[in-house]
Length: 267
Ligand code: PMM
Image (cartoon, rainbow, N blue to C red; front, side, top):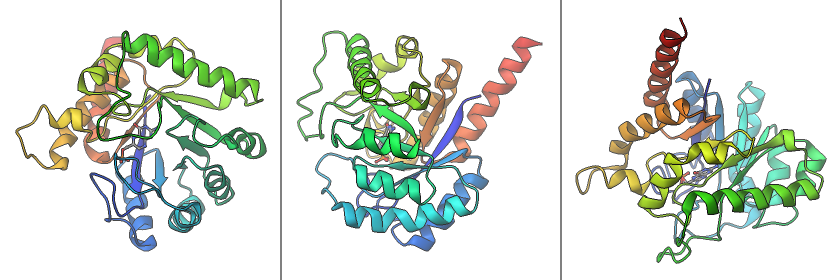
């Protein structure tokens, strides 16, 4: 059954929850709340990836995430760390994280494979064409799904050449990263093609701008939780390994519906 990765951004500037969980105690409490609500994993990040967000020094990033990861892991939570930086990834795994979630798929820091080899952590390879700019200048495709698939495949080949264990890899098509709304829907519609690469697939649609386009203008970010939950259900139906979401309860019930539906079909 599809897993739920709950988002815990320990940042002042993430677009939908920036600043809410910057204090370690508040972040830890929210991480535990996500698990109580039904999250299987908690994804802890200390640097916002939104366009124009300031880049964080690795030392500051580690100050934000390591205490939170250490405490959550000590309490039995399966933690992933959302980072582009190999030093932060290493510190996070030493503190108990089991997955490194790298939105650059190893392109931002070429030392990432060493950390994976040293620590044996699982690794989320996301489709990435560089840091986001306001103009979305890299969001240009002739065949979106085929290009995302082949660029992910190239990342996998590079990682395997550097000795990374294929059993540790998870792929993510990177919704919203150098992709406009149209591209995002194409990727979702073509999810099966990404899955044919043979790796577990993670989907991060939660509260993203392309969902806002379905809602009345000016609707708050939380209003995107309903469309997010529907995507969680459809992604589960399409065989996704996990969905990365801010609001766990709405996705929990969506996935429970999928499970009940599938059980009814299989009877
Ligand atoms: N999206 C964001 C951050 N990290 N990680 C993965 N693997 N996939 C994503 O789609 C993804 C990610 C941006 O969203 P946020 O600012 O709400 O965390």
